[in-house]
Length: 400
Image (cartoon, rainbow, N blue to C red; front, top):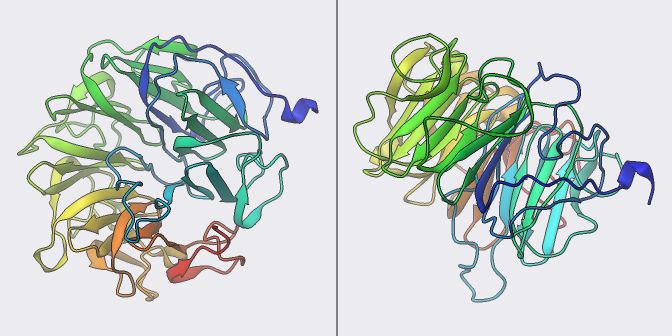
């Protein structure tokens, strides 16, 4: 095997991981790593990251766009025909992956080998990842991908020197490592190996924005840390938060969180949705384009209720009725509604999409098992075999 495809091996030593989150940061320091402590070469095929074999899932954020977490998604074993389970999807701005059972496929941009295909060529449709067996969770970032196999081992294929990574242990502790340009690690300094974030010991979910990090705690409270330039910490100030800081004004416990470029959203246990941080292009969904340093309510169309949030170039929600509503920028058709409007500052339905059981980035999984995507397609990330942008849901071709 060539040096470009050699598997990296590094021990993290975090105990039993239950969630991983990554983010690609444009201001990352040379040599900083996500999961491969100290190594500085790329890997274009999966490389083992030894850890205790109890990893349940992974969730990845994307530097240029937003974060997608696998936490709280649809039950992948539930299928309408009793046959094969549905695909699950993880999405970044430029590449995506879909998996079920022993099948793992990725497509889109591949300049750093992030597709895990053993080369660095972009793929306009699903391509099988080499050197990996059955997986139970996948995370994608700007220039890297990680998966958890059925034995609980973490395997990654990635480009070096991009962003920061955080993990949650089964005990609820948070560890972060990588670039700390803006206090996003919560540990006061760049770390080439995981370092525990103090002040939090009950985390159950973690998400990462461009340079901020948020954790959902066991009691449903949300804590964030990072620069807070746009109010992304959600505590009513714009002061830097060097460590976990409670988000204010949430009227009920959070059931799911999602972090975007400079904003975050929370789906509450009573069905309400709130967002805070940077409001440019209507990303908060509150009917404005203003920044807010406290959570703002987001109203879903027709009185429907969100049951799953996903942040991408636009933000989207799967609704209780199986419909999907999106808000934010409509660049390259990111809203998926077939229009050419520049943006939408409140949730609006995708007319051609129903029966959705999950959303991830600018993709949805339908009840019948098919995967549809929309929006920018310059690197083939829609997965329809072309590089043509799509302003309506388009079926991903080539998934068996």
